[in-house]
Each structure stands twice: as C-alpha cells, then as structure tokens.
Length: 168
Image 1 (tube, rainbow, N blue to C red):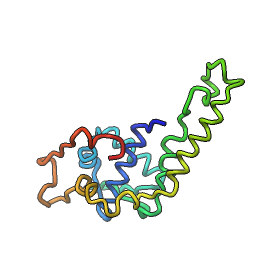
Image 2 (tube, rainbow, N blue to C red; image 1 turned 135 degrees about the horizontal axis):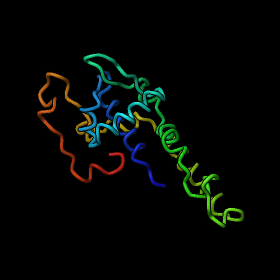
Image 3 (cartoon, helix red, strand yellow; image 1 turned 90 degrees about the vertical axis):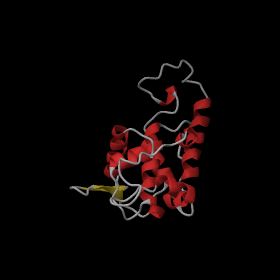
Image 4 (cartoon, rainbow, N blue to C red; image 1 turned 180 degrees about the horizontal axis):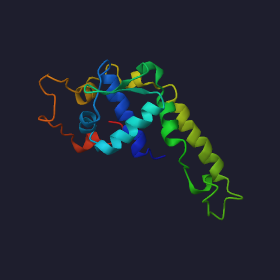
C-alpha cells in the first residue's frame, strides 16, 4: 500500500500540533517546517478541521491547534479518513473497472483483507505514541513562538532529503 501525500501531510500537521500543544500554529510557518507547500498544507488543515481533529482560530493571532488530546487521535482513524475512499486496485472501483478477470479473480479478496489489516494495525497507535519522548521529532517540529529567537521568516528551516520521506 502506498500512503498518499495528503495522508502524509495530515500526519505531519497533527504531529506538529501535538509537539506544539497549547500554541496556535500558522499554516505558513508549519508548511515551511514540514517541507510542504502552503497550498497543500491549507487543504489538509481545512480537512483536519472539518473532521474535528483541529480547531481554527480567527484573527490577527489566528491559526490552528489540536482540538482533541493526542491520546484521543488514532492514526488508523486518520488514515481511514484520508485513504479510505481511494480504491487500492482498479477492480475495487466498480464504475471504472476494466479488468477482464474481476468476475473470477481471487486476488481482490486477499487484497481487501490486507488493506483492512493495514488499518487495524494503525488503529491502536495514537498521536501521543508518535510524539511522546521523541526528542528528534520535537526538535524538527517545534515552531518558534512570535518574539522568540529562531522564529519568523528570517530563519528558514531546511530539511535534509531523508527527513522528507513519509511520516518524518
């Protein structure tokens, strides 16, 4: 199974919110920190807000923050919300399926079980499990507060290529 960019960014956003718990984050700061475009970050933040994972704050000091406690956010639930609608193979999309084997193929049942097992494996993993005691993650995702040394656009963050890989 391949994780989509949207799901990957959703997890980066949630981990950043959990590392910076109690602080309102701004999408431009977060996009730079997680090495994503501001546009993609905005789409994911909007979806996470719509799904009740984060709360947006309006106004001059606005942004977003976690709505739920990190231990209440199941990684499996996030993955299901962001990946659940995408068919894992052509034969799972009944409207556009052109596979001539669909009527008698036994592989799709195995694929369906494997797909569900993937989500079930992630269900007990919480956002807290990903961030608690993870000092390396905290160093990367901690976003400077306004007025603190190291905050603001004058100190761009650079991420080495290995850190750009999926989920961290």
